[in-house]
Image (cartoon, rainbow, N blue to C red; front, side):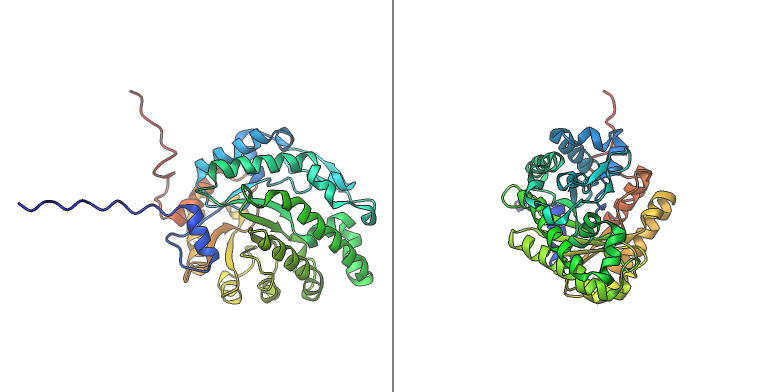
Length: 364
């Protein structure tokens, strides 16, 4: 009797780190990557915690992120989501803590000319996020890419100067805008710098909601927002980090410019056609998006799964695509809807939380 041949070891399951890297390389990944976007307020709401309660507790912040990463199996893990404004207290801004909302900027910086971006490294919440991120990387970094969330230079410049003054200055005082952009770029690099390098995060997520076509024209985007992003991306690439650039609202008139940012992942609002964006960004960046967070919050789980399927049909063919919501999750979003969204990309049947987690063990 012939001896049975030894069976080959099973192929390792594609892990999140690998499939996200494949998508960023504009390849067809081994499986479709899927991720929530940021999600800090949502994680806190699910856990009954507040932004203030974690702002000085890196272990608790890291523990929250690690717990939900294992529960949800979202392919990108975010640290520091929702705290972007908190860091600005070190720059003389006044910030209001009104949980469950993220910290809100109440008063802009009194003087851009006297700001020292270096002081951001020692701001209390920035230090908390830095320590939390390193723990998350230690515990999850072999399996998941870890991202930190920050404002992009254009949006940060607008917040530091004050939005109304900034928008007026785009037309009347371009020199003032350029100065604010220079300071903001230094601030973004100061915040991200200690998070990069060995033991640091893999992705810097830069949100640029104020560079939306809903607020500024294409000309101002090209003149001010684009160079600021390009400089940040170039700097982070030099430190070995990838960049996710997120744009809310209308962006269809500037997709070609967005493709010139150099970002590895471009995340877009639900109002942008994924087919149009995929064509415009072809060969330039991985596309992320763009299921409406409003629909995630209000629709049924079945409807969310169907809408996720439509996004996959538009963005998925040919690779270079990560299924994502079009913005940060509302804390009011039902957990079942988030899970339905994630399952839709994995091809898991409705109601299934995954093969390894989410099942209750029977009592013995």
